[in-house]
Image (cartoon, rainbow, N blue to C red; front, side, top):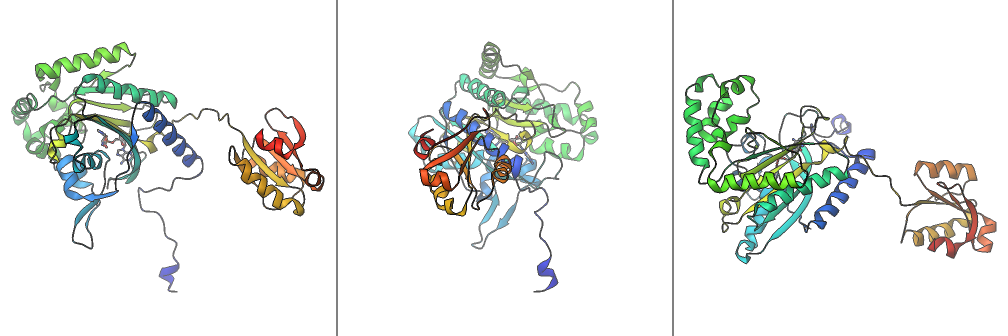
Amino acid sequence: MSKENTKTIQSLRGMNDIVNEESTLFTYFCENAAKIAKNYGFSYIETPLLEETALFKRSVGESSDIVNKEMYQFIDKGENDVCLRPEGTAGVVRHFVEKKLDRAGGVQRWYYHGAMFRYERPQKGRLRQFHQFGCEVFGVSNVYEDANIIIMLRDIFDFFGIKFKLKLNSLGDSTCMPQYKEKLISHLSDFRERLCEDCQRRIDTNPIRVLDCKNERCQELLGNAPKIIDNLSQECKEDFEKLKEILDFNGVKYEIDTNLVRGLDYYSKTAFEFISDEIGAQSAIAGGGRYDRLVEFLGGRPTPAIGFAIGIERLLELIKMKENQEDIVYIGALDDSCLNKIINLANQKRKTTKTFVEYSSRGFSKHFKLANKYNATVIALIGENELQNNTIFVKNIKTQEEKTIKTEEFLID
Ligand code: HAM
């Protein structure tokens, strides 16, 4: 083997393994967020990690940073132009249209979680492979659905004890947005050359993206630029007012951010972001909004839709786990002759309870130390005496109670 072949290989920049405490939090989050989503009527959808590049160009948009700079795009062995998904919505919409659900007319509610890929400059909270938990709803134009989605996000963050700020905006629709864009372009053209290079390009590709440019000079220049919410059509204005009213009624606090435009081009009407003050510069923990035109852009019949995605890695240091009430059982043998018996008992116990089993026989104190490592709440041991009498020694760590009981009793306890 050449020296080159024995060099250790590291994970790629911005792509992390998730293990130990992090993986415990990660699965705790996915399981419980899924429970909440199911209670809201969502069912699970899994779409491929690899899709045709055209899907993201037509949905996320050619003017977006994601499509412009951040895609893991390549030509596969069959000469197909493909890319790793940078987000989850496009694949779900592709499925909806491909299966002709746009013609069926009903309401669809899906949730998903999985890896997304963006070739960004890695930093704290910004990865190249990261995971989202997302929800998408098709077939409901009623603004109560917008509120429902936001309230569900509030419920998810509350469940995990995560504090957030909610930023809200309306991006108008096809009746008011084109006129607004004209107004904005005319305002920006007065000082076009003084804007950053990206913004000069954005004026031609998607001028509203100038509004959320991070460059301080651009923000200063924007000063008294016209605001989208002052230029909404009657319907968009009424929906936005209604949305605020429903959120107020349900005790959801929010702030209006007239510069919130989102980094993906498919949004209309409601747009929102959930922000945490506790995780540094990459503070957005969830984002979403309405995308009533996207099904059409991908070849389907016009279908209203709305959704969101949460960035799971950004939550990991914020999640407060609720104390686990369930028992964890540790079973051990005090003598080699008891090993077969404990394996058999452990397999039966696992039908109802999380159970760890130690394959070597050991003394009492060694077993207690090992059980502690597994955070066991019940320690069950069998020696020769117990084996003969078909009994088992059991200690409950929470109550400190010790007893020797029949194995049948142990299995139903
Ligand atoms: P997004 O705002 O691009 O929206 O991403 C949603 C969340 O994913 C962000 O708020 C953030 O928490 C997390 N995130 C994004 N990029 C990274 C990264 N490089 N590293 C770590 N976390 C990241 C969407 O993706 C839309 N598909 C959301 C949506 C669903 N809109 C409607 N339906």
